Image 1 (cartoon, rainbow, N blue to C red):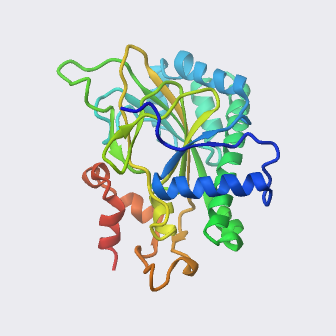
Image 2 (cartoon, helix red, strand yellow; image 1 turned 60 degrees about the vertical axis):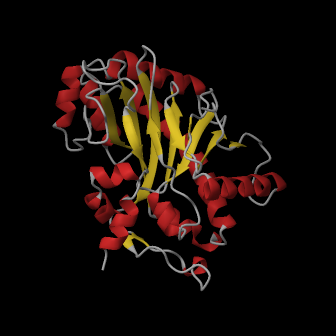
Length: 314
């Protein structure tokens, strides 16, 4: 298996402003990568590295070891801290969900640090997420410009929501299970874009030739992948990356992920600019919340969830 064969795109150039030569060059790389691979490795140095390092430290040393707080958080209004989900192979995959939705950071912090709500943690999450959202905005602006949809960008972004999750894949393999089986089975994400910061390797992406490839992990490395709603919105122009998590060794794996999706009620509808005789409409308009309800374990793992959902629509 090659260590990294997905495209690598540098976003660190300070001269990369909309309309600049650097911007246009990077935009072409983004479009090509998402058309052919559905993902790329972004080299991005705008995130506060000490904050990022401290967040990973808190995940490892404070948040995930607090099992009683885990149980308590399940009863909170967001009800999104779970120890097991259908796509997890073993009972050793844990995640926090919905951070960045209104009030979610404070609810999370008050659960784990009831004495004061840990304002420093809340500040770290907001600082870190703001820098990653800037990368998300750059990539989406390049997508819309590259596909001739520049005038639709602002309206589209107004309908986006952001969700940040902390994930933990524990090193222990339950007795009787095969360590070679992926911890998170192959799937595509449901929203628009996903940006992953890995603490350790493990994320693998399926190439067109059927080979699973493992992107790099470095201080300035973030994996950006298109998801199903972007696939549908662009009429199949951009691919939805099929990926899984497979880890080895004796160390817990942590990651921080930014997902973007649409607000409830927003209709994913391919713009007319991307539909013509040579490119007929591939996907019927839909509300992403209906798609979430539809997704089943079997459809998700085969990568056919969006296709199956589209066929179910009238």
